Length: 310
Image (cartoon, rainbow, N blue to C red):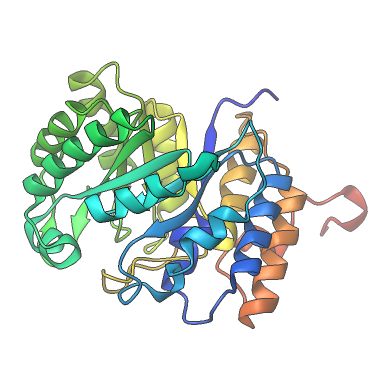
């Protein structure tokens, strides 16, 4: 099938940032190369944040410098402030490939935004707008994720009116896309559909992406609802690796192999090789010494008749 959904692989950044086990630079590069071999072409590879707060991301520049230079692949670096943006831009100095795109973050509630970035939610949206302008001047693509779009661990439910207001502020900076993120895994398909449709009505020309956590078991259902509401780019993490270190109980991202299995079995092309993904999950599990949440990783792909259970 021709791909009709783009999957952004986030295991090397959002996946690893919540892990206590240390992945060496070479192992992060190996994880990224495994994702590339499975056909994934847009990947979060580093986070330009304070290494004291997120130690796993301290070697971002070294990881980026070691990545294969593939013309059909987009490497994304996460930044939370102008200092991080300058670090991302620096990876391209001296004619180096560096990151191709920066992912900016605006947090949809004041309490979470203050804890995460030291500012209000509207201030975080305005900062993203300003950083997009700076990135554009330097020839860097930029996109924005509206974190905690559905719920906040400190303030509860989030008003969609507020999320949409933030999106319109961010859109003034002309990002390549805006993502809605269910950072703590509280969304439901009905609410996902509502928010996507409302954003589409207000910003009809803006491409939308969605980022879901499977904290309460609704991640895949939410991804399916987002797709049918008009989202054609979805984040996922090999094995379901990840979580947010700043949000209590925000467990893993939706699993890339589960997302690929669900979409492909529904006749929706992804361009991703499921067998290669499963190999990657087994390697990560061996490094961590535990199983990852992905059920497809445990059960395998669709069984052949010879091994089907009767």
